[in-house]
Figure (spheres, rainbow, N blue to C red):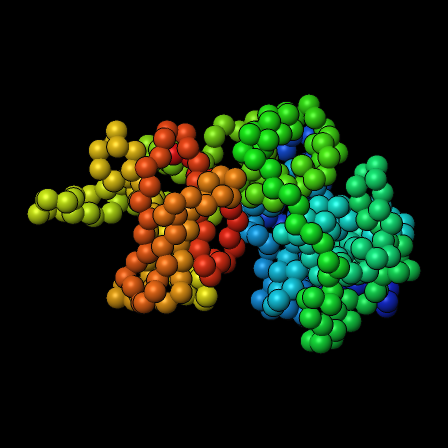
Amino acid sequence: MSNTPSPLTLDSHQLYLEIPQSPQVQEQLYSTAGASMRAWINQLCLKAFLPWFREEIAPTARIYPNTAALPSFWEVVNGTAITFDRFRLVLIPTLAMDGDELRVPQEWVDILEWAADYYVAVYVNLDDGWIKIFGYTTHQILKTKGVYDVQDRTYSLESEDLIQDLNVLWVTRQMDEPEALRAEIAPLPPISKTQAENLLERLGNPDVKFPRLAVPFSLWGALLVNGGWRQRLCDRRQGMSEQWSIPQWLQTGVANIAGQLGWSQREFVAVPAGMRSAEPILGLSRQLVIAGNTYELRIFPKGAPEDHIWRFELRNAVPGSQIPVGFKLRLLNEDLQPFENNEDTAVTTVDLLYLEVILEPGEGLIWETEPTAEDYDQEILQF
C-alpha cells in the first residue's frame, strides 16, 4: 500500500495534494506562537509534498540539511529546503488564501550556502487538509524580477510571473545547469566568535520576537551560515541548556538532537603506549555515509583526564575495508577557522584517518570530511 499523497483534481492547472491524516509531527517547544505555527505549516507542507515529489519527479530527493536540523530553521525563518540530483528546492508555505504572490525570506536568496535553484509557492489549507502548489520560480528570476521589501526582508513575485505547472520542472531540469538557474551572489563577510557570542546573547532572548529583523542582514546571515551557531541560537531561544557537551554526553548519555543525528555512546578498545594489555575506553560514535559508503566517526579521550587530549577517528564501517585515497578528516574552530595540524588526508588507502588535539575545558570544535558526508550540518562540539 502506497503512502504517497494522492493528487486532488480541483484545478487542472495547479497541483493539489492531500495532507496525510495522521502525520508524525516533530514535537518541539518553539519560543513564540508565530514560530510554532510556522513550524506546523512547514511540517504539513513537507509531509504532503515530499512523498509525491519523490514518486513523480526526483526519487533521490532529501531534506536539507537533515530532519533533525529543521527546528533550528523554522524557529527563525519560513521555508524548507530539499535537495535532489544537483539541485536545491525551497518550499515556501503560506496560509494566505488569495495566493497572489510568492514571498521568499531573504535568507533563502542572499545567503550563498542557503540559496536554492527553485522556489515553490504552496498554499496550506488547514481546514480541509490539502496543499496547493500555485507555482514556482528560479533564483535567477527572483533576483532579477522579484521585488525586495526592505521592511520584512523578503523577495516577492506576483503569481502571474510564476511557472504554474510543476511538471515543467521535471522537463527543464534535464537540460538546466545549476549555474543558469542562480543569479550570482557574493559570500557574506564572516564574523568573529566574539561577534557571534554577542549576537547569540542578544537574539537568543525569546523576548526578541523577530530576531531576523533585529540586526543588519550581513550580521544575521553570517550567524546563520554556521550550522553550530544557528543551532545554538535555536537552543537559547527555546530555553534549552547546553546540548553539545561531549563530557556530558559521556557522563549522562547523548542529547536528544545528537541521538537523532546518529551519535551514541560506544566502548572502544585501546592499547596505551608502554602497556601490553588493551583497556576499554568510553567514547562516542556516529555512522556517516560518504560517497555512497558507510564510515564511522569516533571521538574519545586519550591519556589522563587532566591532559585534556581528545582523539577523532574516521574508519570504514565494513570490517576489513579501508579509507580511499583523497579522503580528509578536518577539525575547525567554532568560527570555521583552521589551526595547525587540523587535517589528516589519505594519500594512500589507509585503515583510518585520525587527529589528536589538546583542548581547554569548554573549547568548541567543528568536524568535517572530504567528500562531505550525506546530511552533514556543522556541529559545535563542546569539550
